[in-house]
Image (tube, rainbow, N blue to C red; front, side, top):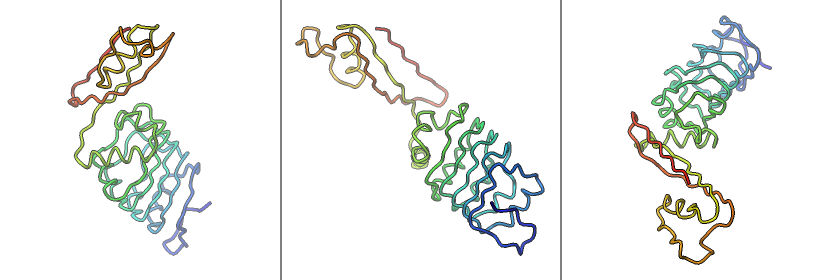
Length: 213
């Protein structure tokens, strides 16, 4: 494991693992001397704020900040212009600086891991669970001018001939199946069907639709 340098003449490695070290502020302040490192692991350090010298590490490509206590990120994280992978999993993030994250994506960020932050609502939890590449694509879409929508999952459960197939078909834009159609149009017993509906909405509005069969 690499040690924090004590002088500018100390040899500087390209990859540094300081996970679980619980360094003090004085030691973190020396990180600014490691301007040539490309990978830095600061996971499991109970960090509630990012060390200020971190923004000076402009050659960083991989940054692991997982398993800390971060609730937000400073806007100056955009100074890490070479960042390709950013791991923020298992923190206490409540919100992200979306413009800052979008800027990182336009500069080459490829993966952003946000799993294990249950209070985070943007990006949507479904996107976060799909992994860092999906989160990056979500942000890239925002940068490209797309607007955020809500995806609702519709689950239809019912006995035979209750209308499950017709309901799910209608949600997908298909014509409803007439009850006089042959039996193979009807599901037997209890069936489930899932359809995803893309619902465009204003940021201040929320649409909730409920149907009981």
